[in-house]
Image 1 (tube, helix red, strand yellow):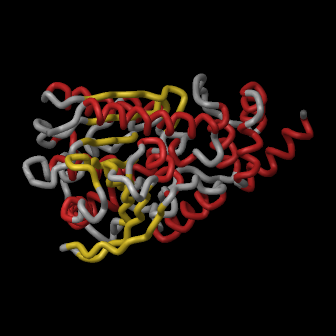
Image 2 (image 1 turned 60 degrees about the horizontal axis):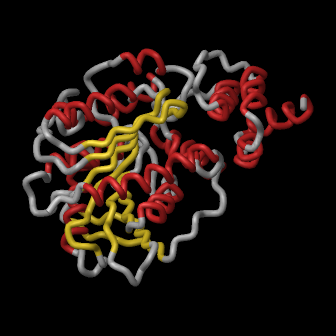
Image 3 (image 1 turned 120 degrees about the vertical axis):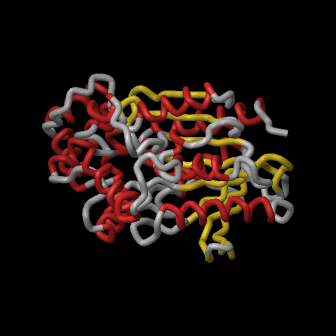
Length: 358
């Protein structure tokens, strides 16, 4: 076992997906011992031991967080990291890259249709990455699993990133993409009254900001799926101080994102354009919110769910206590992450069916 541990340790330090997949098959006590062997210094008793190993390997290489002062380097590093854990993609009947001619300019999108001959609901998906990194490729597998298990079409939007664009420009582009979906619902074979917005992390922020801004418009979404969303740039809750080091999303990441997305564009931290927790919450579409137990953003996601309920919005709130930020991106290497994400997709569809907006 020691020789195996040593080999896995070497592969993990190189960041190879095959090593993580092999490690995922081992009993949790072996994973715990490997994390200890790698010198993981944080006491997170219920955190998935596979994540502990991955974080320990990163720390050993001197890596912490995923957004630095150089955005181009951060983008490249994030792309490479996602590429290194890639495996054979989940099969979807039709996957097509589209060019959307929006009012705010042309953007690319990827359309996933699990049953091209059938009319299905549509989920407009905004990827995570702190508004600074991420693209159609980094979230391809997450979108495939969502389409397959929610039994819905997914349109993933390749929106322009900060700091090159301001929050106003970014959100306008994402709102225009939603309007385009409504305008083309017949060609896209979308079931009437069945268009949702969704996103993880920064994408969850975008989804709910777009939902707030369009609440009184003809193209308001009929449901929201928010996965560990950013909802509050201004406040610092207990989960921030508890989990700001040694995990996927760090205090340093949040400081850089705040600088690139808010401060460089002179946007106040409590402006609903970036902090939807301070926005108009009444009459929003039914909302399904996911948080991870070991995540700096945990508390703001939970608080947002309470605020929505207080305003009469139908809400389902679900916490995954042993996970950390970004777990939907770990589905190629983690059985548990994949199981949870499939569960989210299925349960979101049930919630959406039960709470249809007429």
